[in-house]
Length: 188
Image (cartoon, rainbow, N blue to C red):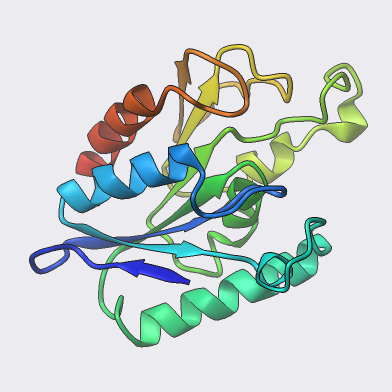
């Protein structure tokens, strides 16, 4: 876990997870971290145990969720105690944040490049991950590349979709940071 406390007294906390094949140094995660810190929001970037162990393949969803919730509990009992908590992540990390938002008592969820379906499987409803996103009962911001081969989630109740130039990699970090900054101002 990589902690980045706000310079002054934090007004909220943001916990972010990485994608399945990447780490917490992904350019979009770094841009979001910097944007949040500029707003007085403390940030924790969380590496899943499989990445810490040097493996590239993610663990099954229940193991990812359990590890994530353990980190959330640790942060809530310590450095983030009493702060409103926003959870999120990129791709696989966004899915974990969605599945656990209720149990984590999050006030909002940030999804960077939410993988709506595996590439090329958009016409197979059994492959859709929209139910994970739709189950979230707090405000959700999804930032998606306008040409993401994993699909683009639809807007829904409490769910805002922001399209930025690019694909699943979200290399348009300036656009990502601006969208997150405006949204965090309202939810944090």
